[in-house]
Amino acid sequence: MDLIALLSQESVIEKEQKKRHKFVPDLPELEGEATRAPKIKEHLFFENKDIYISKHNRYAAYPEHSHQFLELNYIVKGECRQIINGVPYLLKEGDILLMDTGSAHSIEALGKDDLLLNILFNNKSISINWLMNMNHHDSILYKILLTNNPLDTNAANFILFRNEQNEHIKQIINNMADEYFFPKVFSGKIISSYLPILLYELARSLPHEYSETFSKKDPFYEVLQLIDAEFTTLTLDAASKRLNFNKNYLSNMIKKRSGQTFTELLNEKRLLKANLLIESTEIPIQTILTEVGFSNKTYFYTCYKNRFHCLPSEVRKNGAASK
Image (cartoon, rainbow, N blue to C red; front, side, top):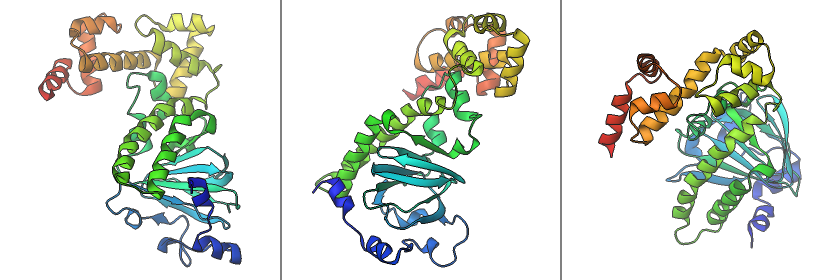
């Protein structure tokens, strides 16, 4: 029996919901007159497990609720309609929904051919913000996209990965589900080994998912790309000429959209790049500050200390001591 055949079998709750055309509570928080969006507690799922995987029961709408942990929904087959933070979404086969602590969702009734997997993560330190910080530490575009999503404030605590963008993630989930539902020798170890790979793939996919909220013709998107690519020599005057915008207009737009001035964004990029080089290479600090675009050593050290609350030499000393 393969995974789809197994998931297609009707559970006891599914048979009851199909018969009664009514939701049958599968958790104590959802019994009786529950408060709006009750919070599901983690102790119900994890017993010496890093993750918990289950099939979502079909034939009845699932009431609004939230979680104390990161949750991933994977549409194995068919489709699924959900209301997430009050906004309706249609998820199709292969789509992945990642929901952080605090996001609330309800799920409309799934039909016979609709199969949804719920994957819950035991580690509370894992969050969307944690995934954001796993990659691209020196990218201003990435940082702004992930911390100031101007087009969808509800997206701060959930991300929808569409089918065409996540082939590697889908394969990992399918492998984990096979080991989970058809356990063999070492299945638990194999699932635990897949988990960090899944998290890295999710982190690697985040920039694309968030960048889709911007039009590539958006001048704010364009200036962030320009800063990332040409930070060592870029000036506001040069950026305005490259993008064919009045310098004052561009300056005001950047301040309004990011809350920072052009110079502050440029220095942030330079400092992030400098810090990455200080942590990961043996290049002399004087060489690094020049390479990233700082011409004044005192100014660089002042900016670095304000940004990272320590001196470059301390970072390098601590890095050497840890090896």
